[in-house]
Length: 433
Image 1 (cartoon, rainbow, N blue to C red):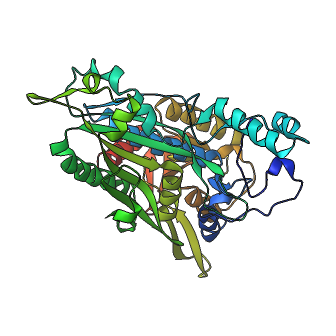
Image 2: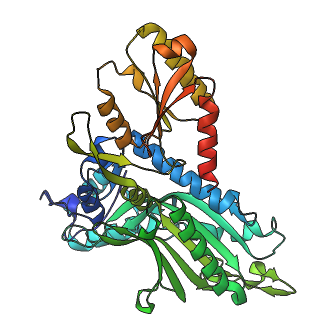
Image 3: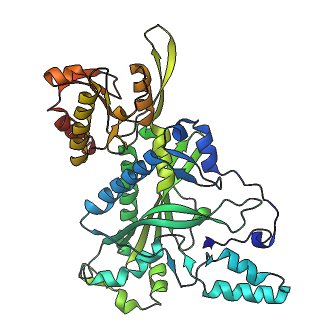
């Protein structure tokens, strides 16, 4: 199955090879150099419009989504998680069709029959969601009894959506896959403006909490001519990429229109308690593009540091200073020269201890290719690894190992029995900043 999109000519009926357009996201990847692709984070997708994630990028995205969920749902007693399907049989603008079957059905049809067949096909096939808002609106009524119909409260979820491509020569009506994080907040009319301001502050603080350069994140009001249909007010959270400012998150104040439309105008079943009054709640939508957010954190964390090597030569060191809670790998385990089998046993035992404690670790000792300490540190700095732990003969003799900090490059000696607690305290302290 594939997503069907209408181009200037139906691509299934044409054998012409269309030149792919270059999206802002692809330009961002190119302007960031080869680091992100080289160290297994992110690279342009096959279409050139969306990116694919490597092992480290996948883990980074998972961490970002987890932190979003913690901040928006787990720590907010009035917000509840939901899960809704990404496709439905309701009328939608984006349909799923079988490309090969469609080509066979449309082959050699006269124009009148072609139009009729396409109309019938699009009318009955499943549609893919373009946002998470509709699913939350549909879940509003089932959630009311759980909450005793009391305002305010929110419904949150994360998932895939399909959004229109920037228009180009070959992208008319085409959509791309995006991971969204959505909060839909239900409140009274009299408090809606204050709640929109509250959530705008909360969301900006969240983005800045994990940033190396917080000033690159900002908010602004949406101009009246740019408001989404049905919205009375909007706010955008922006990030300043090298190629320009782009929107990471949008907040909309929709009033009660969308909720009434979803439930066919049945006001009685939508009534909620606002103090002593019964009201139909107003809807605030907070929606973040998490793929663009991952890119923002990567660009924001990338630093080029000048350093003098042991031969007094000046060179530039790339360091990916991701926030400790977002970093895909917290510690890399490596070993020096010595009794290889015994050192490896110590590494394997320590690795298992880290993993059982929930500390993501990189088994660098499995790479038997010789590397100097400087090149090893450079590799782990580019990967964004917080700490490098070196197991040596001294570890076998007295239990001491060498620990290097990514941010400070300071090396310190620590007993092997202390390293796990040291890492757990470091990560915990970073989460609470």
